[in-house]
Length: 73
Image (tube, rainbow, N blue to C red; front, side, top):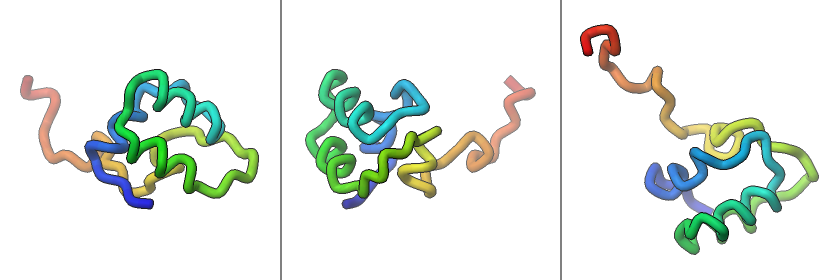
């Protein structure tokens, strides 16, 4: 299983919190690349809900990771 920014971004609009099955269903319905569905299927399913994309891929960049001042725009 591997995640890239491009693959993980397909899950940004997922209905969080979501279970593994809900995320797989969302990825299929929205036409996400096959790699996204395969990555989700490879995750261990303990019946838990995932609150955000960071629960799946901890390295997913957040707004704090970008160095720009929103007040300037």
